[in-house]
Length: 322
Image (cartoon, rainbow, N blue to C red; front, side):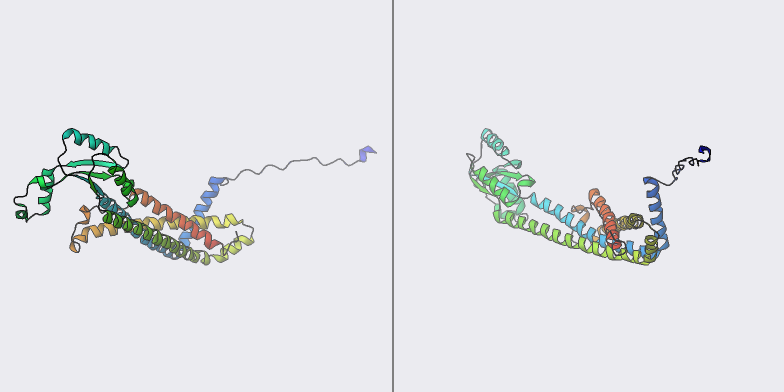
């Protein structure tokens, strides 16, 4: 009876599927990158418009940044004129001069201390009256005061820093009258604060405008292939699989637009330097005017990449639910 019992079928494990050559992170990244490049080639006009828009938007931001950086440099040069002067009615003996100079140098915020004797003071006075030296005929150095000219470090050149330093300076024995141009320092620091506030407001507005422009421009690229997105979703493609090529495409567009903007900005800068002499009374090349530092250029390129990514991401929300 047992011989008629049906034997169970032998159990066989299905063979493990061999790994495909293109699988893995590197393979998927290569596929997404290749797909993004194919999308760019298939929609040349729309991508040119997108990159052109990104270039124009970043060029405006870069121009503003170039002006702001040079204004900061000019303000830094002007701030070096913030100087505290301590006057004396007599010539200081060398020993007393050295001792007092060392005490002043020990105060917080001091960058440089220089002693101006009466002969030097008269020489400077004559140089300021160049062409009218006859007005100083008979003037003796003894009528002019001696002084210490004190330059401050950058962190102590604001109004509060200068006032705190002057208060400490007046506590030193032997210090007479102290002048530092209170009104000039106050106006100068007010101007600097206003420029920084204006730069922050305009910079924030421009960044928001750039994100809006890029997002709406990239929508043209995605809208042109909306049918393709719907078909991919219907056949079971994951959201990440659908979005990845478009996100990479946005990164490429943003990076390309940023590089073109930097090249155009450099061309405009060189053209300005070459032709500025015909309509300016000074030479910009010798006045400290400089192009953007490398870290700023890298920041512009990185900003273009990030903006392209964010523009693609926000545009995809309309067609692919996240």
